[in-house]
Length: 236
Image (cartoon, rainbow, N blue to C red; front, side, top):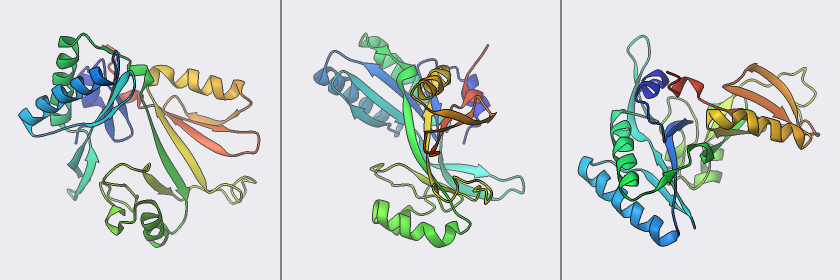
């Protein structure tokens, strides 16, 4: 797996690191043009034996690059197989950028986004099987692509669900909300997204980890987190 700093050094100007993967959006003249682009991307992937996740819209194509069997090594040398960005993702991202340029397509990196779910619990190992069954119907989704108990669907039908024992017993909202939404956006639009939420009536309740993580609450105290991987951006 590549660290965020290594991804930044790759200088993939049309791609953004969101959650576990690299994301890009390319604008097209229509669905058929998007399908032709997706076919060309598939050919590029065939050449190296690796492919992106692709969603074709009416006038855009969304791509995500992630390696299902990246290796994460702890300080003591323990290895875990995880979903993360590796060099093959970086190499394919560069090739896709070339394919898009050949087809005259324009990237819209600020438009990419990713949603994940978080659940506050002190017993993730106990509750994870229930959520794996409910969300995916597959017990193997528990701990898939993660060293923990996170629930990750191999077919990407539902958002990833991760567990966090961060609820504060003294927080009056903690008894009302155990789930929260993580909204991953491109770093250049994080401030705009937060400002829009505040303008709509929301409140910033924790910006101690901004600009990477900013917690926003609605009028009922329900919380969401705006996430931006600023360390994966080349600022040179």
